[in-house]
Picture (cartoon, rainbow, N blue to C red):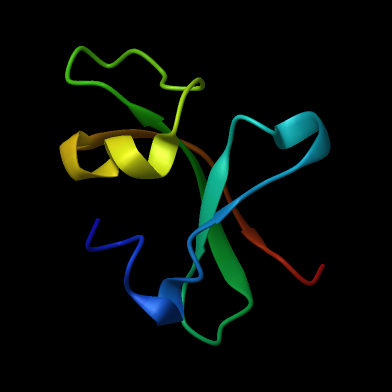
Length: 70
């Protein structure tokens, strides 16, 4: 929940083809890290209320690091 509640990260749920992914921004660099939250066994969490489950999430699968504006 620390990441989700820290406003500069802009923790957000993506849409469309990337609906199972979330992202955070890396400051004002234009870069973001795209991820899928995982349970303690490393299994992707893509169903249910992800934000409610965030307090338990310790593992994420990083799917991309990119410049959001390119």
